[in-house]
Image (cartoon, rainbow, N blue to C red; front, side, top):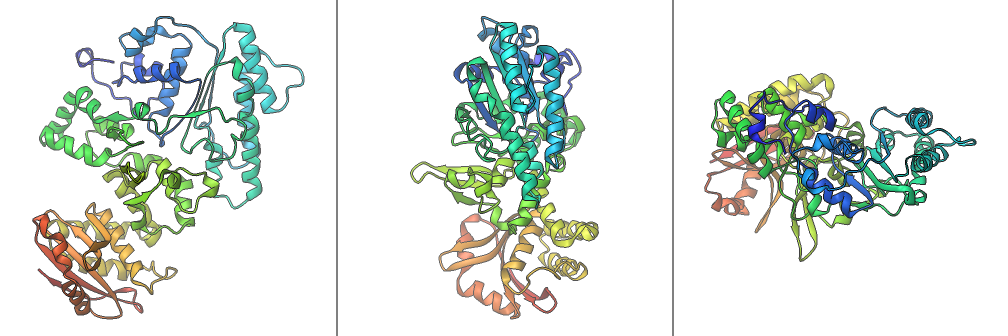
Length: 530
C-alpha cells in the first residue's frame, strides 16, 4: 500500500485511465493495495474467472498479475504481497486483451487473434502445420513450457468482447461465426492445463453464457465469492483511510464540509454489491475522475454505456420502473445470455443493477440501481429513446426548470412544465398511449432524471399508489387517470386512504390527481390537495 505519508512527499496523482500496474507504481499514482487479495486468489485457485462491469479495475488487476508472475518484485515493494511471497519466480506469461478492437464479423476477429498470436510466436516459435488459432495457441503454450522450464500463465482480459460487439446484430450467421472462432481459440486451455501455472479470465458476462466454454469446465467463478468481492473497486473503508485527505481537499474546493462531500460521493458512486455480505463498493473510475476534476459528476455512465445493453433494453421493451427493486433468485440474473427472457441479467452483469439485499431464508436477492450516477444516466438514455435525439436538448431545458420548481415544492409549476414537455415533443406517435402505465412510466423517467426518490405501484393496505415522489419537504402521491378527470383521481386517493401508508415519514403528504387524454397524449387537467 502506498501510505499517506509517502504520498504527501510528492504531488498526489490520480490514475484516471491508467490500467498498467507498472505505470501506476513507477508514476507514483495513488494506488489502493489489492495485492493481498490477489495473492490469496493465485495460491487458492488454478483456473479463475472474474466478472465485473466495465472500467471497474479488471484490466489493472490483469496487469498486476502479469507483473507478479513475471517476477517484477521491485514493483511490489511495500505492498502486502511483498511480505507474503517468499519465493518470487518468473513464469512465461501470455496476455490477451480482447478489448483492443471492435468486431463486426469473424474475419476481423481472426485478424486480431492472428496479431496477438504472432507476437508470442516471435518469442517461442511456430510449429509446422499450425494453422488454426487453437493449434497455434496450443503450440505456443507447449513451447513456452519447454523453452523456459516453467509452467505458463495465461491472462485473458475482456474475453467476451467479440460476442458482445455483435449481440444486437440480426445476422445470426455472423454471430455464430464469431462464437465458433472464440470457442476454437479458447478450446486448448483445458487440454493444456498440465502446462499452465495459472489461468485467469475477465469479462462482463458469466463464462458459460456465450456457449464458448462447453469444454472448459474447470474454471472457478469467483465473481460472487465474498472474500474476493473487493478485489476491484474501492470499499467504504478504503475511501476513508486512503482518500481522507483528498476528500477534505475536494470538499474545500466545493465549499462544503468533509462530511457532506463523503455523503455526495457515496450517493453518486457507491452502492455496488457483488454478493451477499459484500462491503459497499465505489466505482473506481468515477471516484478518481471526480478527485482529479474536483467535480462530482456522472463520469462512468458517459464513458462506459455499452451499445449492446442499450440495444437489449430496446429489444425487451423495458419499462423504466421495471429495472429497480427486483426480487429474484440468483438463477434469474445469472443465466446464459442466449436463455434470457428479460434484460435483467445483462443489466446486473454490466453494473446497471446490483445486489441491494439478500434473504437467507428464502434465498431471494433484491436487485436495484446502484447509485445516483447510474440512475440519472440510465434515465437520460431512456428519456432520449422517448423524446428522440433531436428533441433531447429542449427536453433537458424543461427538465431543468422542473428541477428548480420541485426544489421549491412547487408541484403546480412542475406539472405545467411537464405538460409543455409532452405537448412540444412529438414522441408519442409510435408509442402505445392508450393505457395508464405509459404515462406512469413517463413520470418515473422524468422524476428519476431529476434525481428524486420516485416509486410506482406502491402498495398500501387498500391498493396501490400510481406514483410516489419524495422531495426534501413533502411526499407527493400521484394518481393517474386516462380520459376521466383529476377529481376522480383525487377521490381514489381519498377513498383508499393512501396517505396513511406514509404517516410515519414525518413529512406532509400532498395528493395530486392527474388526468391524461388519449387524443392529445398529454395532461388534460390536474388537482392538488395539501
